[in-house]
Length: 318
Image 1 (cartoon, rainbow, N blue to C red):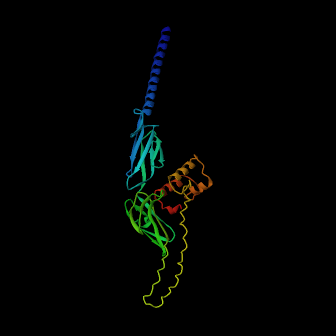
Image 2: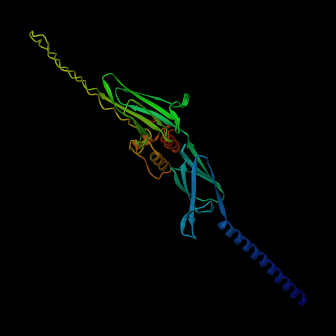
Image 3: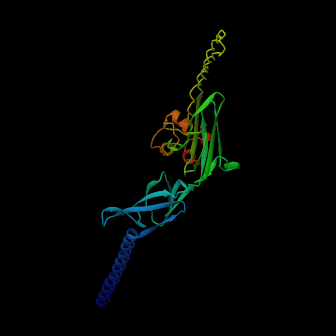
């Protein structure tokens, strides 16, 4: 009987040793898997022909931000995009590892998920050409597209503009400006000119003012020694009424911050309101609802971004 008890105790000890040995091996494997997960690097894939994209991240070995294409989960990824000459960037998107998002503007940052990420760029290759003529002057534009794209032109297209003032008026200004920031692209001294289309929407500006009245001529003295003819007193020239200054367009829809320009800043305010980072007042909400659906959300922000780069002609939200 004593021998059997000793054998049982010995067998139990052996079983415990195997059990603890198996448990220890499992724990080591789990720790190794966890370490591998935190150390594994995932790829950043850039998929675009419209822009040059730079991907950067923190490098602890040099304590600085450097260009890189592989990141560990949780690391911050910095994205900078520069449009190719014939394009203008609309949006930059990232997707992969079970997450996706959009980068507003040309620079942005996101946190790397557990998985490869693809960066895509949406861009425009045709840009709007519109006009703003003051009173008593007409503007004509040629060289743009036809059909539904008749108010659009591609990068480096040759565009001709002509301004015709009304009778009794003279042209005082004819120039082409970058839509949104009023940078002068071309200025003409005459009533017509040609410019090369930039990779951005433009607006043709023309102004006119009344022509100065013609001065009366001196009376002619007769050569015959007869009594000179007394010239009739010239009537006072009629001074035309001064035309009112052209009314600058008042942009309401889309101009959320009230600075007179519809731009990415307005889209940013809408997105911040949509995620409850800020609260727009009633007037700003009215300006922000550009699609008229009674809600202020990312759809309105996207529409404003399209207007800012010329995908949608300006009159749509004036």
